[in-house]
Image 1 (cartoon, rainbow, N blue to C red):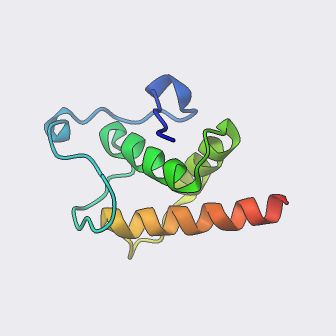
Image 2: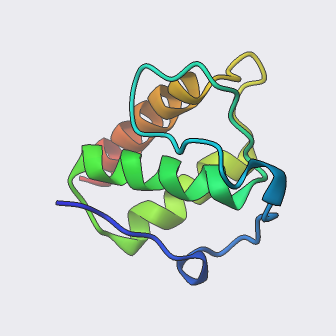
Image 3: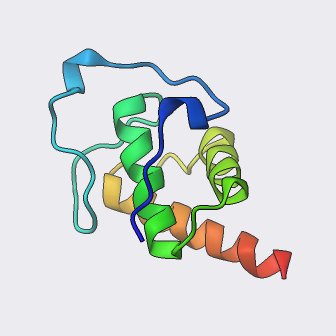
Length: 99
């Protein structure tokens, strides 16, 4: 399954930082580039990757991912692959609790 997220699918508004628009998108682990949680061009590929790993297209999962990201990822996690692992692990915990 391949998830595609549009900006209109998101609850929060994220800046469209044009200076990073052409930088390679997150495509999976490993990826040691810094992650910018306020940049739409970073957020969408990250959410798509996590949802693909969870094998879901659920709007609930997307909303929960946004909440986790916007509540704050620990400051010591700055690389894309670290943020990905954190979001995926957090979402697995949320889904386990929902059952």
